[in-house]
Length: 103
Image (cartoon, rainbow, N blue to C red):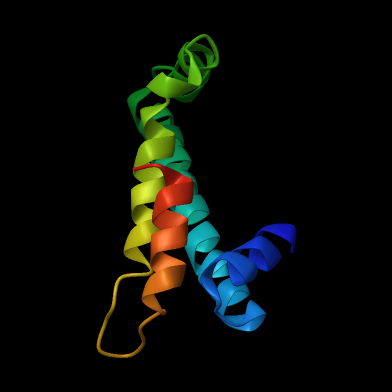
């Protein structure tokens, strides 16, 4: 809620529009993580070799600047905000989230 409030005051857009844009971003970001994790687990189940555990240990030992999975998740989240034929978020909301995600 605090982030949507800050977004609203920073962009001049309504709180509801900001909250909706933030929810769309977070949903797609987390959906990417779900798909990535499910794929790793499926590779493990069908391939018989550990994939998920070693990957998680590798990431845990890296600085956050090397967490490429997060960057890709942010990209998927930002793509959810791109204008499309059905709906378009106001440009200030897109710009705010673009600056926040740092892609």
